[in-house]
Length: 213
Image 1 (tube, rainbow, N blue to C red):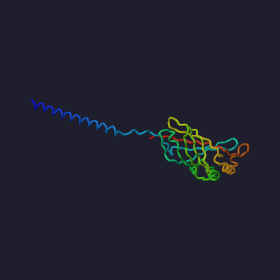
Image 2 (cartoon, rainbow, N blue to C red):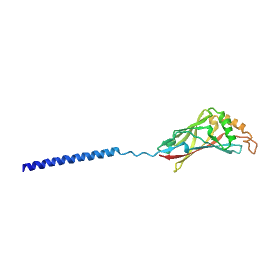
Image 3 (cartoon, one colour):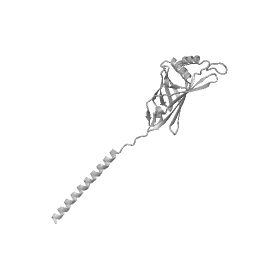
Image 4 (cartoon, rainbow, N blue to C red):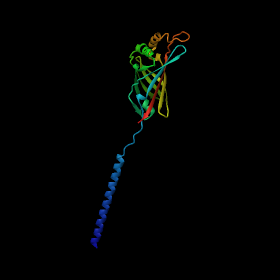
């Protein structure tokens, strides 16, 4: 009887240890699973140069007749952010003047040589978009002058971004270059009143599309 009791006690101890080991293994497996689960990646907004266009409108004659054009090349590194504002903020860019296009070869040449060609550092317009206090500003460097250009920005649910602004050429000391351009285009900038005029303000329109990755 004593032997049977001792045998039963030994079996009980073995069973208890076995169950305890299984519990440890299960807990260890659970802990390993929990620590190795991949962390979900946050989706980001991305602005790319190939999806961005820069158009401008200048004006001539006293009737303020619009003359439209664009820059075919806009250089900047692809930029991402958790929000559209993050993606656009601190985006630095450069615009080669060689990419100026108005669908008129003679006009393009005059603008490149008799306007931009009369400026300091005539090869590029450079800048950085900033988003501060819920407002967008482009810090533009042209003709050796850096100045802020307030931007009106609209972002749709389809992640399309439209930026618009009016650049006053006097803020970049560009009225001298404008005067030279007006002399070169004197007759072409005459209106019905016979007055030749080239306006000092230029409208800017930038469009882009924020992709998601």
